[in-house]
Image 1 (cartoon, rainbow, N blue to C red):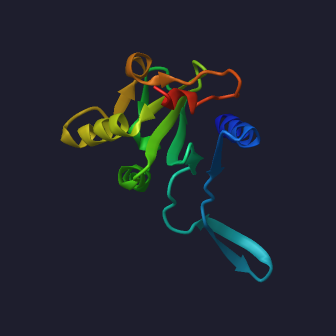
Image 2: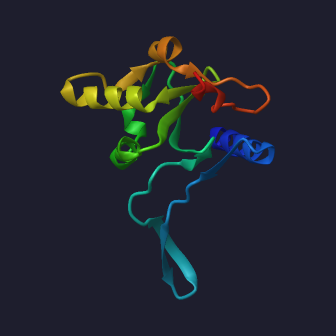
Length: 155
């Protein structure tokens, strides 16, 4: 939950400074009641991704995931429909992956994410090694903004 709170805080900072407008996407829930008492609740169908918005006139979407693993990020943390939504997205798509143990967040591009995801179905790994992130993904830094992931998109 801490990772999501950091993203939400950063998004509020972006909004206040006029940098971007990015919102958490709510998951629709189906609530089962027995009279006035709620007896159960569950997601009502697949959601899209965690966040969507607008930055510099471009639409962006991304999924935010965290892991306690010190060696890799397992694909089981994603749902198939989340990956497929990113695949079909015509704007900028990516994922933010937070390694709890190292307190590091990496931005993985849509292209790299989809390539790694698809490889698992061709006999490849079912995870992305931490070392791959260190060498190939963009480390999200803290600076003017708490978790300045948009700066990682600049180049």
